Image (cartoon, rainbow, N blue to C red; front, side, top):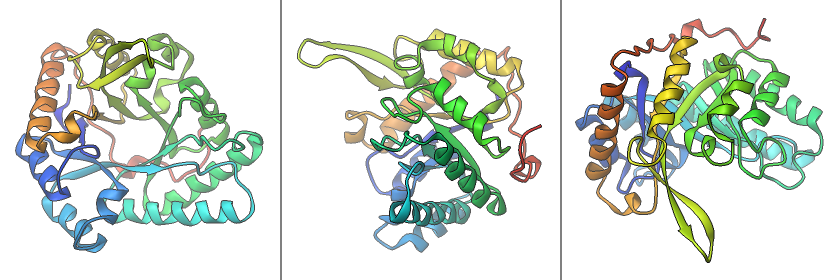
Length: 293
């Protein structure tokens, strides 16, 4: 497994952006996933936040995230387009390779598939000049794409080489139906794989829920290893990130959370030492947003 291909999602951690960045780098992570809010809410302003990220030397794998973008009309469509352009600008400013886009959960967004595809194709075209790829992620309950297979259907319809899938293993093992869902997808369409494990919480009042934890700390460690093995078979060239934010970790010092994430990564490295994963293909190799052939 290639260490450089694994980023740390620092979006849900406690503390200022610089503290979280330093914690990640201090424990050996060379890449991170950021939230746009991390930049926009910096007390010294967004320009200072961008400069700090750039000067830190850490790579930015992806920026979170654009919500409820597709399927709207009129003034709301224009508003969402303005938001998308601003987020793409932030991506470019910090050198992020990917913008994560969650399938719209707006009640009426899924009514016109042709409009959805047209909107997302437009977003893809806007991203091309900046060298950014769009990682489209299913949203449980969405009328547009509620699961991985639904999101892949959207990606196939958009048919742009810089428009692919973001896979969240937390959703994969709950709402998506597990590893069997992968058999119904083209794995070369994945741009980002977010790795987290789950501990099931049974509570009669709220029903079954799951606590997100780092890989190896929950019930799906073997499945995560199998997922990575399958991606290795098809020479997956996208990015990985360890993403396991929960309410407990949000109250702990960043160093504590990052240390736990690094222990998880080392656990994966030990299990996958005979399953080498290739380094990610450089951004220059990305085609210029034209339909896949």
